[in-house]
Length: 483
Image (cartoon, rainbow, N blue to C red; front, side):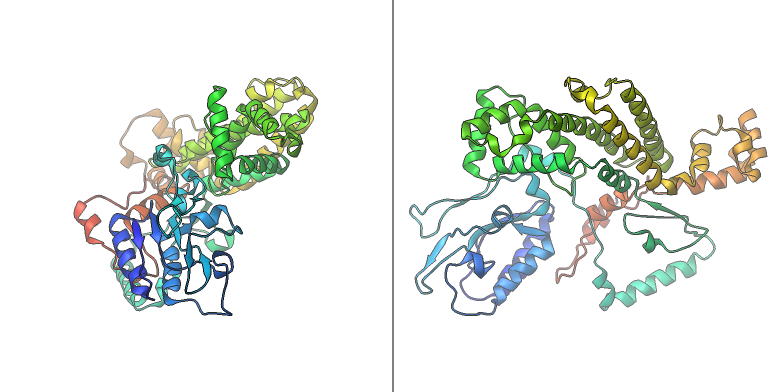
């Protein structure tokens, strides 16, 4: 959306009208640009300030607009302390940056650093924004979070009465079986009847920290930022890759909040390392990155590429709908078995499942260190998935009842399990097994499904906008499906 804000201090223009227009189309992929006639931060977006001035109502409204729609000033995001301006104000005798783009934070990974040009025919400087729209379909929706302040307004009493009405009318027919969270265990409380699980995808992502790859990640991030942070230098690098017929046409930014980002960035740096070295030599900057000529560091990078590739594959298997918790945990159990195999093969100096590491002749010298990392990761998986371990036997019974040893099953299920394995009678004859299976099949292994559906149906925030509940209701879709 293009915007031209009035010079007058009219906050209603920026907040009510613009917010309403954007909300009509959704706020997951927003690009709002133009002349806002307001500086974001006078300290860095203005050359001269007349003492201490209070923020205008319009500036406050723009800040509120950013918070409401989860937007970010993309130029300031890439250049946190730089001073460049887009307009000269004769009355204020000051250069200002009042032309900029506000974009959804979810679009940052496909957005190039914004450019501020030079004045041609207008009294404003042109501001450029470039995005890789071909990668738009690969973006993951950002995580939805409930706004707790809603419970403090006049709607809270209505919500409480509706919940109370539901429980009073469904007393005895509804039982809480499971709580799955990606927060602190302290948030779950204590209840022997309820199964508490930590989001399986979140736990898998946290396991990376045990690998202690900071000495690899920091130089990689520094290298990528050096190449991409300036538009001219970035374009020269892309042209250099085209001239050398490289396998990739660009480098990815690393984002801490994106699960698969680190593995993909390391892999691209590895595959382009020769081109990167040549480019740095061309710029006479090779000495700023001594790691690229350090064989030990390159071995660590190769190991990081391979192990993060394996972890990314596991992460992808855990994502998505239509997965029961026992299916998700089976993938984790298989990965733990894989790690034991990798460690054993590593001790024999075999790198069959580490193809990147296998290309380096120095790899055998680091076998002991890499085997320890694999063993540590194996132990971390056991520790973090201990809550799933508590229901492991029940999950096995649900997924493979005909191969389950009756002696290992709970006593109240043993006789029914034997009958089930020996005949194909109706499930009604096995009420205890049926009850246990129902309890396991309603479990949520992760918060992924909740995030996906809540975001696709509702947009709830501290806003003056009226949510349009009628549109999804008229479609008649089932919006509260679990699996």
